[in-house]
Image 1 (cartoon, rainbow, N blue to C red):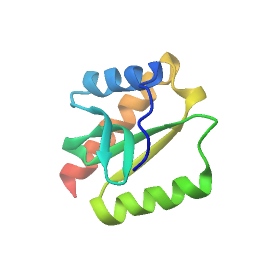
Image 2 (cartoon, rainbow, N blue to C red; image 1 turned 120 degrees about the horizontal axis):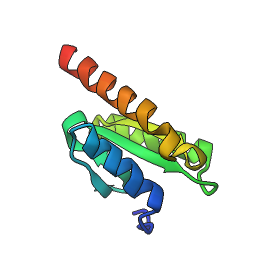
Image 3 (cartoon, rainbow, N blue to C red; image 1 turned 90 degrees about the vertical axis):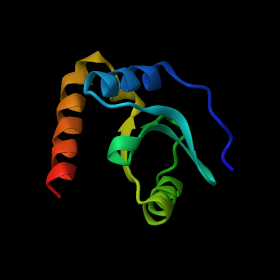
Image 4 (cartoon, one colour; image 1 turned 60 degrees about the vertical axis):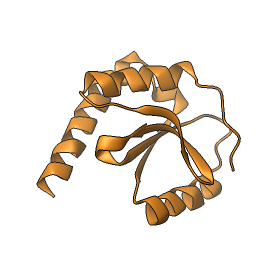
Length: 104
């Protein structure tokens, strides 16, 4: 299993945006053998905030594993863009995705 990371201010910020958009979320949700930063159960969507420690090849394998074994969609965001100026765009994208899931 992956070691648990300490929740970051960016995780709390993004989780607050998810709540503002009308959805619940879980920080540091286990999907053995992995842990995702934020999970939105209603949308079967994981949000990953990629700091400098993230490795593209490993993350691609991990994302494929989660999609295949748990049917989870994964959205990745670089740590540097998770700030208040990104909030409106993020919420808009989340609501569009939710509508697409309803219409699917």
